Image 1 (cartoon, chains in turn blue, cyan):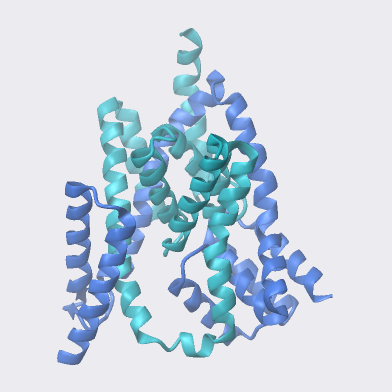
Image 2: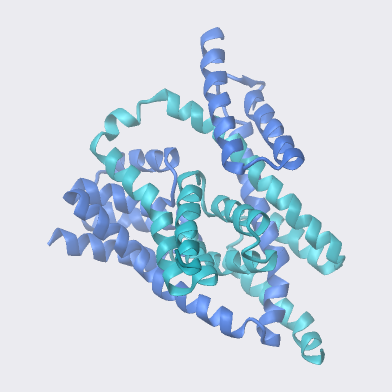
Length: 189
Length: 186
């Protein structure tokens, strides 16, 4: 029964993957390639590429993609549902506990200790992305630095800080300018 | 329309819009949520968003989905959880299902790659903008230990790839030791 298998596989992936998409990848790989043979290793590499080209968490992307390939739209639905059900149960419980107990002195103290660390972790995401964005080999690279990416970043940052434009607008604008810029530079160089 | 229903509907629209634009992992969605729900709408306090980030990060499953559950519950209770989950998973679910039928062609499209390179530069700017705002809050509070904690977390994760759950546990413990008693006295 393919629907049950899809559901159960992605349920396990949802339940045992901590710390976001890249931590879940090895587990997804094991389930879909080794355990079930739903994909070849080459197809799985394509799936990662597609996940990077599309919005949304890698685990949800994989569930929808593999579910749809194996069993059409119902397959995509059961796999995605399986993937998020563990989160729903566990995190809803946490949300309830948070509302009930976050004013307790011990919990409140723990949270106060945590908040600055969370700021550091969010900043680390920016640092990691800077590494892959600014130092990529593209049509705009000069001496290993992607000048266009740096310029777009600087412009977007100034616009966000100074005029408080909507982040979605700024990201889309950077995307369109990037598309034009790389196509033009690619043609010229 | 009742106020409750209106909020749920707005929550659905906002989470869906945010999810449709999260390229690049859980912290991007958290940054966008902070801008939307804390800065723009004032539905959440900044501290709450940071707490939710820590909880979402330390729970199993995708960070984006976990954060949506926490924010949804805070804003509209259990109905809020379901609206924000559906809002969050709908864009990737629809998109990836559609792509799965034509993926050999999709993966060849150069234009999408270029668009994404540009968007990534914008995404980094959004995260940096959010981090700047958060750093200012820490700075204003003026506790050295908080500034050191933030810097240490950044270095440990970005340079040494330390497991974030270890950092969460260590900082929670530190917080209990530092502030646990202080608050009880008040």
